[in-house]
Image (cartoon, rainbow, N blue to C red):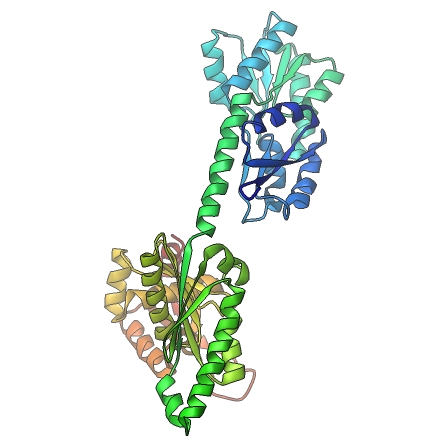
Length: 445
């Protein structure tokens, strides 16, 4: 079925029936189970399922926390929280084993949740919490905590959120209950998982507009001696762009001799560009046709919005100097240039009053200032040369020097030394932003 969503389910074998019964209530989910009573298997299962499923579901926080670093960024992942209902059931069962509770030891459960549950059932016995956060290295500490509490007669039973701890306590003869999620907890989490995948699918089906323009088109045409050769060059360019748009599974329209528009979907665009990292069309046009192309790509919640953003993105690419691609997303943030190995990202409009004031002092636009902040963040260094500034802002070296003089006058930067040159040439002055901590903080918002 086209609407089937592959969901990877990771947890202990003992929960299979409960999880499976709840999943039957969600016909859109096609479960792929990876179950083991060994919690250390969770990261391995996560890697196995990474390329097979649309969403991941963990039986609780412990397996999720162990696997977090192995979860791909593009896959939504959810864990079933231990809520009050699971705790009530554990308390009920422990009372059946140990009717007279003189003290209870607990781990991994939120203290506030436990306090609320005990108040609800009118229980007043003392409760001792294992305070440290969950970590596999602390499993033995957890068992030791429960054991010493029991042997010192502070407690006579335990409740744990980890099956491995429950098993060890049982071997030690300590009355205990492992808190497992209730059907209600599982269903609520499955609803969240379904919503997250539907949001992603909606996002992937968003319309994406792209505008491609030949830089310096009229100058190129004037250099060609005949109309026949101009038409042949246009045809070669059209075929090159058409091949690329076919890869994007998109539709291409020629708007004029030097401008083209394509329409595709966001999911395909993200996949083909490898997450906005690779647009070979611009480089191919340089190699094959000796042409510079500027590209603007717009995302939007409507066709009108995406088209408007594509035009803004194209203007950003042209302002940068051409021969590159910029993207304007649905939140109007600008991403680019895409061809660079580490693109900079900045907002389309600056509203921060301090940034605007500093930009006014320096006699420059706040957007230029924001681009400089992006350069600092990317380099993780507040030092730069005039050459680096010119590259980042897409301006000439002479313009970069003019800006630097204004910044020096406004006391925003200082000269800290000279750059050592590996080849012949004049050493370049190195500048440093004086208030780099403030700017980096603003850029990281």
